[in-house]
Image (cartoon, helix red, strand yellow):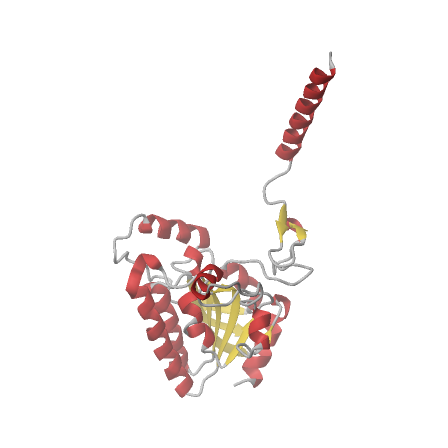
Length: 278
């Protein structure tokens, strides 16, 4: 065997060995933190799903968050379903897939909750339901959440996670911002507390309305919070923007939010705020 054949044989052997090695590595074994780049063995993540190095919170579903957040919860408006008002292509199929995946009827879970002796209205947006987008049912559920809380004289805590208004429902989704804001104003006029917790990502019309209307605004570490995306901003301004411009830490520095709270501390922090912040 000449040197050329020998090299080809060795290369083929190495390729085959690499392929066999790859085949033995299961999908999802590792996760890379998008903020600090730390590689994390997935099974080592605890119930909070946060990076052990920088405390960035990986995206989690509403029910997964609920499991460690409260002591008691009663869901409301789980029978509301989007009706595809624009007959948008494949929208009904997408809705059905998301309902099965998240066990939610739309992109927000709402109800009444309790932490310790504190009772309150709770809403949790789910980033896995069409990217937590704001549709007509999402808006209706959040509006009803505030209306009930006003009637029952309860504070409200709302966790936001959204890509913005839902394009499949057009202008009807944009109208939800004004509807929710009206309910929040009535809740505020009644002298009741509203706390928002911004999670990754909180963007678009959600940021432009109810996410930033809280009496107290918290955020998880390194969460992306903004209105337009980086590319849109740079194309509009014709210049590069800082990498951390839309990070929660930058918003805190510039006075847009009140405090950054790690997931492990959220339950105790919210209980304290409910007791003394109102």
